[in-house]
Length: 260
Image 1 (cartoon, rainbow, N blue to C red):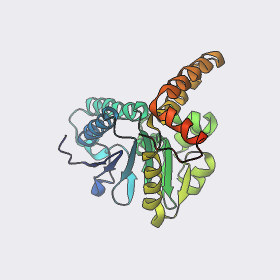
Image 2 (cartoon, rainbow, N blue to C red):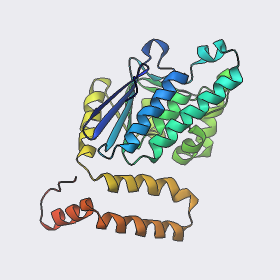
Image 3 (tube, rainbow, N blue to C red):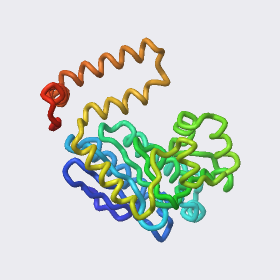
């Protein structure tokens, strides 16, 4: 396993926990951290035992986004940003397409690419003091990290334009109202809430949850009939699986299922 210096990566049976761990730099995304995030995401996607991945930040920030100081100090800013974006995007894609569910625990401000990462979760839970902002055009840059893919799908084009062009800062309550978050909880309850969700999904059917992710990823690209055909193929595959058989048997037997 990679010797992680910029993230904390811990696995415990079906649960993996990734913590962006540069608190003195507001968990800014530089090349080293992004490469470690790719390594951790790849591990989670390749380990069949992992059912759920929790992503959060150390300290007061989830992530302030790309490390602008590192960009400024680079002898070739263009090359630095291109490489960083490519690496970050590999991590985003791997997390989105892995079978394990991704829970993002937004423990503080999520800005720029930090916001892109935060909203990419399959479940996004924030502490009440969290804030979300794009902040790209404020420094003469344009969005990355999947923001231009996820935001229009989550909140529509008009609200996405508002966030990206004005750099509006949303409170956690506003982000919940807009549809960027699933839940907002008191800061002191965030860790316990995330743990309860992680344990819930750790007991759940991995294949079934993975198919939910896959169906939602392709739904906007398909005609109705194409999506119906995909749904039919996926539910048939689930029904043939051990978890599908267990789920049906448990329902008929009026007992709680025990998924693998």
